[in-house]
Length: 485
Image (cartoon, rainbow, N blue to C red; front, side):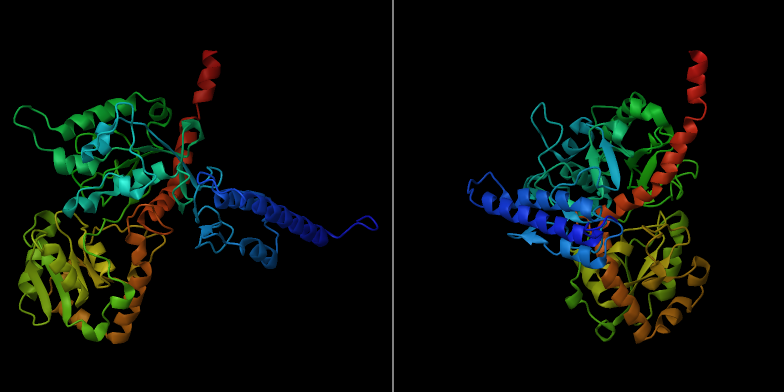
């Protein structure tokens, strides 16, 4: 160091003080403007975030970092995400997220509305592909009832559309890019579950359902795209959450990244945990606030199940358990449906029960698990083939009880196991349920660590595999081009 030169730490402080003096003077100038279409808070937010990023060095001290991030609001406008606890700007809530800040850059096809929002009855102008998402109240609503449980593609599509809106505050995890060459993954906005639920029946005037027609058009569209040809679709994300969605197309689509409820109706060569993402169902009962959640003593029912009892295939165990448990005095095991007040009654029953039985049905998973979690009823999983959302980051044994199907059908096994779980152990699981329930919330705009955010993060964790597959496909391509030249 030259004689008389200020030490690096002093230089850092000098630059920081000068920076904030500049911001103060600029903000004072901006506040003189009262024009309604000039957002001084937004301008200051961009000045602060963009100007301070270069100074948030990896070798900065905790005191330096804390001082830079301490100015979190300006006139009530968040400058840095309220839930930020470190320097990872990819997880916080920001009004606008630059692709360079995001964990996942996503190219989304501008597909015809017939594949997505037109299925909801939305009718945009002739040149409009997407509805406006700037105001949540203007977003086309999704059908209620049991349709909601498989609405995952709807929430992911809305989140990508919102990622380019300067008016929506959301986590900076996945951001839509308009150039596919800049993308990590490609998102296919086909509302496949809604298409199956509402349009899979053949109309009397035709010989093919709308759902089947759309699947055929989807395959034709994808096979004609250069993005699909480049990787064989391996970097594409296709949501097929309803077990019967994409029944005709799935075998023709190779091995994209599927977002599924489970693997119950997929062969392993098409869908597997190595490349695909398991997403939670959208729960249909109301989330119970933590301060309204009943403790151990105020839940008189030991175990609760209400739903379809007579199922086929792996779900036959429900019938066996029904005859074993129906006469237990502190067990509620009855037939039920979502019709009438069925959903509300189920929610009340779960909130009054210590344990909620989640038994394999026609498929390994069901919405019942996620309804139980948001009602803070400790789930008892009796489904040997079930795959669980985000299990690489969530330890379900902390808040669920797992029982092998062979053990469950032994007389007395289930009730004796549950009665043996005393208050302290149950309370620990109950407390953990309240901590993780927000991971299952689908909402618009999305919030940090909610279901939408968690799905994007899960896809991000698959990105390394996608990149490996893409690179493997290029092994001999370049040499072939040289040879052809």
